[in-house]
Image 1 (cartoon, rainbow, N blue to C red):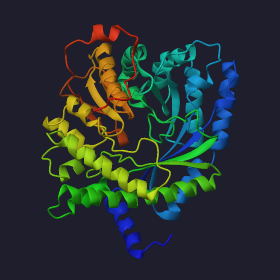
Image 2 (image 1 turned 135 degrees about the vertical axis):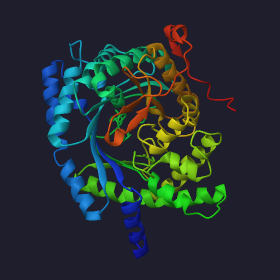
Image 3 (image 1 turned 90 degrees about the vertical axis):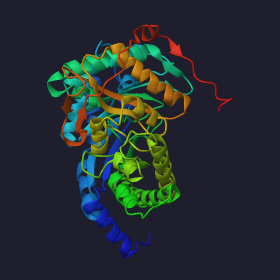
Image 4 (image 1 turned 180 degrees about the vertical axis):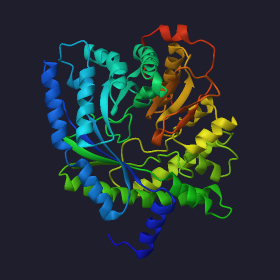
Length: 453
């Protein structure tokens, strides 16, 4: 590939001043051959396989980072959904598996490990149920383990029994980690249409259709896109779209080079490049700031959903030109606590939970890293999950919920998590009850795939 000297200088500028980085390199490891009815044997098999495959992951990514001068922020592991791997174990609780994952992650030096997961969109097996009930203990007794539950797909509909159960699990997880602001919930995602190859936590897992070992890469870049849009002089929306496409192309090409080099050195398959714009609490590295650069006085005002749709589409179009291995979630993340612009918008009163829900209809992920009052009933949390799952199901896209019912906190308070998890203002929820609706259980049928409008 011929690289012009001006492109090198441009990349240095992006890294130095605009927070450009590779957000994450995630090694996916299949644990399907680790199964054993004896939970102790299973745990030993899992520990040995992870530490064998990932022993050089951190060292290799650091070497590639130094070679190219591009920061690689997080090194992570995703594994086969544990509900599948541990299904045959004759034990009522899977939290010991979470502790094994945590120990393996600590020993190989990665930031997080994802895959304490279950796929229950059409119903729950005995193993799925054991895993879900183990989540509060698993997330409160480990530091690096992340969990995700897929409760809906476009083809299967929404498993409302699972949605109802997850409201209780989210509440219990918050209570078990109350001394840290309910941080256990920051490591728990409820999905619709979860992808098998997502490199981003907390929702990463190694799908059952994936190969033995893969390297998936997630690029960042809100700061770069924000800077590019703000540099335009009186642009039309078409000019903005074109600018974002070109910027996304450059970011993606950089991620492709890094990902393939890491995979080659680790003798693993290169999986996918995720095009998501992932913000950080750093000033300027904000998706909300990009929307405001387009002309909105404050993120959350009327026009925000349209601006986000423009941004998401342009990022995908530019990225798709730069890589033939695009996957994962690929879109703009809009987590509240991890985006300085979103936090400001909530504090100003321009951004509400309802507007965030509307925005998720045109972008990736969903209601992400949102703190709500600790007194919020489990049925209300389940209802919020159900609404978001419906958006994903009907629109044939991935959506997710990562809510934190902050123990002892109410509207007007804030929850501090620190680092990339940032700070979350506690947002109000609708106080009218959804309890009877959620208690009905069953399954919301899959939507018709014709007669769309």
